[in-house]
Length: 113
Image 1 (cartoon, rainbow, N blue to C red):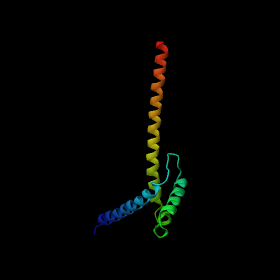
Image 2 (cartoon, one colour):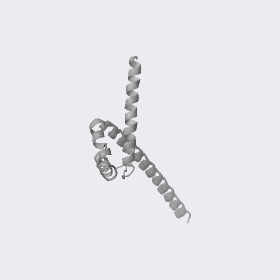
Image 3 (cartoon, helix red, strand yellow):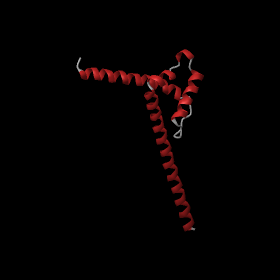
Image 4 (cartoon, rainbow, N blue to C red):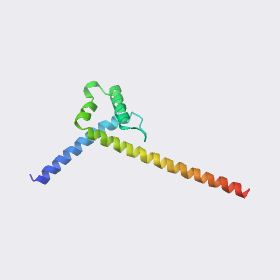
């Protein structure tokens, strides 16, 4: 094996581990409320609460993830947070556009009367 092949194998293993961890986190996060204002600590508390409520004790993995692969938990949080921030910003732009159109309509009606 060349060093490049070894490197690619390690990268593949890490990517597979992240995909597995991400799937577990996605299953947990699906049952909790998450907004653009959610902090990492609130996210962790929510995951722990959902895991205690939904997952049998012998199948719980969150504690192990936080010890061995906290970076995976943090990465998934950042993915979710970035998506929620984008949704919030899109909603704010849309709301602002609607408000501006309504204001223009009112001004137009006022000055035509």
